[in-house]
Image 1 (tube, rainbow, N blue to C red):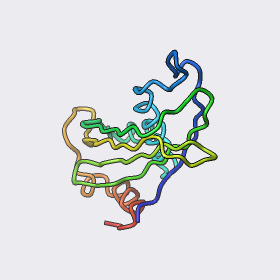
Image 2: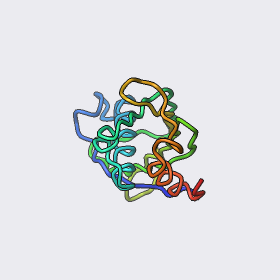
Image 3: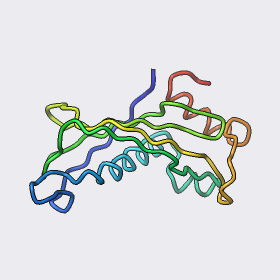
Length: 142
């Protein structure tokens, strides 16, 4: 079973439209916050990955809106590794209203793992420690 990593954000006025509802594009930003904190909590902040020559390029994104977030809501972002390929990773997300636990949005991002030259990196062979950490968070230790 995959381990979920959690982050919190508060919906600020600038994140909303005239109706006080969070603009749909903000969820992509909030997914990134969740993913960034997932990596940090795993011991691999983005800055460290980049120093090691690992780039995580978004190649696909999906989002399902269920309920709107509103101005001043505190949101809980859950993020976890869903799939780990040879040179790719799929991250999944849930955004809930803190306090009520109401599910607002689910989504995913697929990432190509490359170096700065944009060529794929085989994680298991070239970056085994990072690969093992992500695999362990998935509960399979693959």
